[in-house]
Image (cartoon, rainbow, N blue to C red; front, side):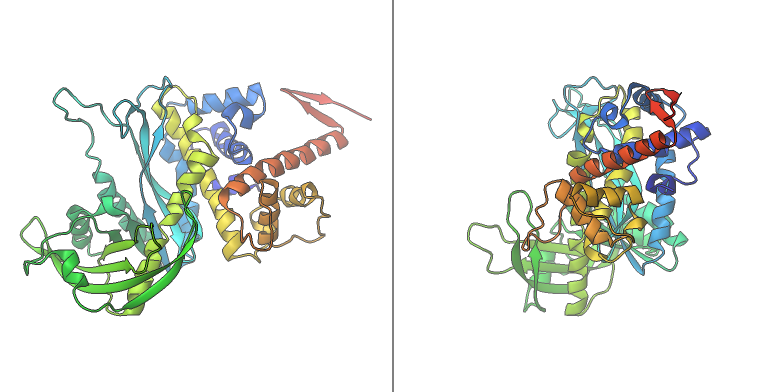
Length: 454
């Protein structure tokens, strides 16, 4: 069974033909993530079928994502703690005639927003997409006001959905992790009223007043630091990787809520010291419902927050690897169906990269078909082994086809070289399958099945 057939097993779109088209499309889009839908489908008939699928009025994007969510929860059950990362990205479709789009950060831009919940293990293994908000903003009226949904709801509702999953996964502690925009008393109050079925860890945006009259951040960082942590900050946005040293403060405080009561939270401040000249020092101010009283507990929370970078990688694959902003579909509803498929594809690419690093000795056939891993060897002019190799070896070979040099000091490949290499491997695997058709005396050509004998 292919990875897509396994991941979409149990899908119910109301028609078995639609079910099969869903995992076939997932396979096609994953094989050529940077290609357009016509290029990924490889023929006019397949392209027409793909566009007919996206035009299904009775199919919701939630129906497409449902089997993947079920698989994600099964993977989550294998872990004691799972981090549920949330963030928002905007998709810019300016210049395209797509019905239902709205303004973005700049009012003249046209597009939509995607806000997924992305589950990862403590080892940063991507476990799957659990939920998503997808919407387009209403334009501002003459008074500068904007109608439509209250966008801050996505953070609170995101926590509520994680709380529901927590009840289904009693052996796994779920932790909601989000950036500054999620610093909302409404979210904290909701978690408190639900009695914290899932923990939350967010970056503080507001320097709130405390009951003792002090400001939050000054009150917490007043006095000696608990200790100092150090870690390697990965390279990003043309900045080189560098070592970071942070001093850490920790304190349990009471925040006034809007009902006249208080919510107890732990506030952690991690402030960089001796930052390189010309580089802005990194300071994280974190809030959580969890009790943390030791330096070790503080270091653990910082490590969990740093895992939030995984959702940025996910967006990188979705927007630059799968190039979803180049989709040419006529309505936002059709975009949503396509995005549901592309989110699963993006998860798989990110998962290959991370497992190749953290679980290098896994059997490659857990994630690659035999034709695929053998193709990775052959395209690199290496003889395939008789037995399936380990995952790291295959991932590196795939990445080498995408430009990874694999020199001694190059470390492990990133997602970009993997998605580029996957296209070549998938084309090769498709060629092997086609060759078998010929050897069996059957040749597939366009939409016709032609009997062909030697």
